[in-house]
Image (tube, rainbow, N blue to C red; front, side, top):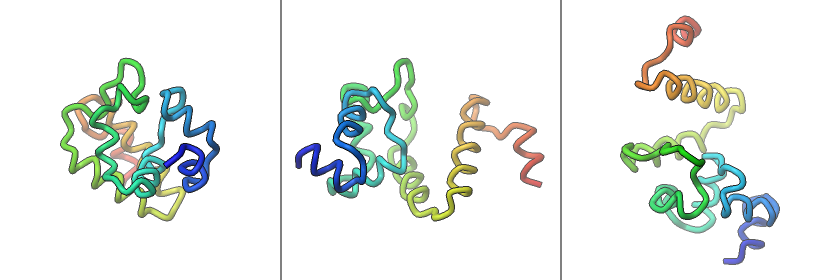
Length: 114
């Protein structure tokens, strides 16, 4: 499949697909799930050679050491969330957990959940 056809099917520009491929722009998880569906592959396949194919940020090992099936479950679940607000909240929660370094929810996030 050409990049132009992939871009059209994904609803983005050819240039955006080029930027994803070269690593100039990050590929959002929701877009990655869409691209995987279009290409008929499992989203986890993109992470097998992520640094070589432009899907990682410099100095970031974002998915190393995390089981592939959990990543796929997370991407599939995220893709099924209809609410923009709910998706944003989920991303904020994940970012906060990542900042804490050990996966624990910060005291501030815990107080918002009550």
